[in-house]
Length: 415
Image 1 (spheres, one colour):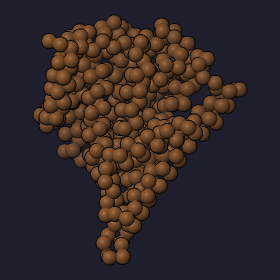
Image 2 (cartoon, one colour; image 1 turned 90 degrees about the vertical axis):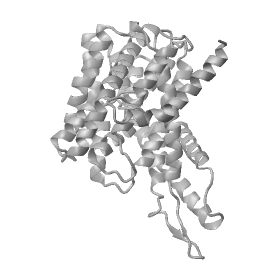
Image 3 (tube, helix red, strand yellow; image 1 turned 60 degrees about the horizontal axis):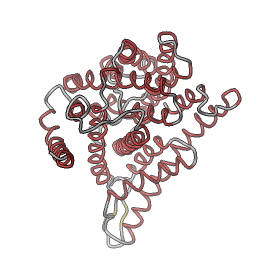
Image 4 (cartoon, one colour; image 1 turned 90 degrees about the horizontal axis):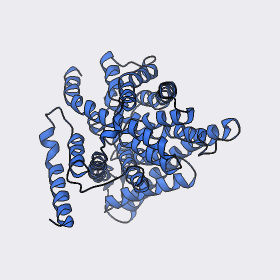
């Protein structure tokens, strides 16, 4: 069979499968991501050999694909989090994304340095790569709709949105210690630029652009037409603009696109309502944008996870990669979570346990690895870091994938 024919058949069957998969898998203790991973393995070197990808050789375009997937997912998650959610709800995800990330990076770097004899630069970089939880693969434990203020789901969603940005300074610190990024005298440039400036400006740029776009849409609807058409262009335009402007100001685009989606959510039918002269109410419903973005996010999830499956190599599995992955999921995540939210929060014991367990690793970690590698990480170091990263993500996908359905079903009954 010609290669082109094989690809058309494969893509067609994959998309048809994705269309019906969630319905059939919903009651089962398995996620669609695991199925996509198996499909990826089937078309990779261990199967039909339709896809032959090397994580190091093809790092540039793998970086772009994972970057786009994370950006779209962060914007979508921002649209799901209602702006009128109380500051009390935001306290816990903020703690997890700041204190929790710092603790996670420190503990994994400490382990990597002394257990694997890695330099502090590589150890910190590895800790930073594995510190963020994932907004792409963790959808099953995130908010289910806009007004879902369940503390557990809100915290896990907010954490995944924020820590994809808050982990970036530690990536830059690791690269700096390896001589691949300028840290400044005594690390001052890292503190004031990579930590403070990039984070604050990224959030500010994204929120400002999201707010301005929402205002513009309301103005156009009030003065020109009944409704703005082509919500998909609005979504893609705001994502690209907020991300591009943030990067132009040397700030974190991940935080910007999340903040843009979050700000756009403020223009819902209640807050954004206005009245025309003829008495008609004018408002903008971000749910139209959300619906398109959720479909786009699902397509990108399929692409990334299939590619992830096609990258599978038995050589990635070693005592170092397995030990690091197990330590991350069973020790470092619970410790960092409990130290972040154990004091000063009113979570129930069950909720704390769920937060400690559901630290899903995924596409964000892949992107950080590709980013670091494309910025000059040497081949030997890159291969070691990728093997630990790959096994950690795969183990997370399997363990969290099989446990999420029964655990969340139990949680809903208790709640």
